[in-house]
Image 1 (cartoon, rainbow, N blue to C red):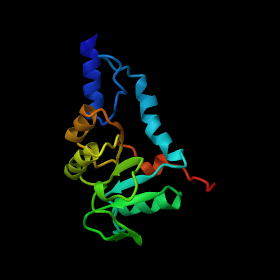
Image 2: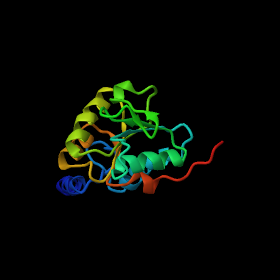
Image 3: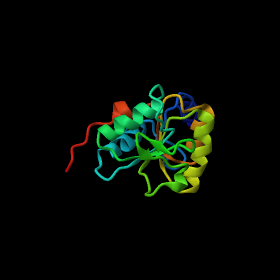
Image 4: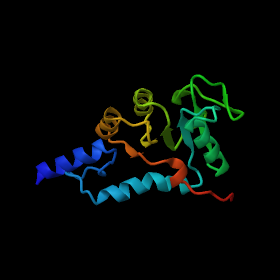
Length: 168
């Protein structure tokens, strides 16, 4: 039985899916749905903020589209890009260390090698909620988030999963 659980974890990991929190030595596949819902549900919380790693002003890049979409939906978002001083007229931060406030979710929209580098910084800074956009993941990235026990969602677009929040 343990062999099958490990094999299932490996298959899910390679496809970018997290099996849930480890319960003792095993993860129950049914925990998958609940575990993944938690991070998406955070977007509905009024105090949630997102640090978007890879935010840009280039309209042909997803870092631009996602940044503007989150702002339009009323989700506070910090652009993180060491190559930009501003994004959409807002101050851009060169790293997670430079953020003025702690973000609830770190969202990655950069190539996998950059995702892995910034993930190291995120772990060092104590961040646990990680959203990996399609294209920002790789087998190495997925192994890293699993090995570190991060709460993450991968291969799911934050624009699709978010809802417009009403002003309170």
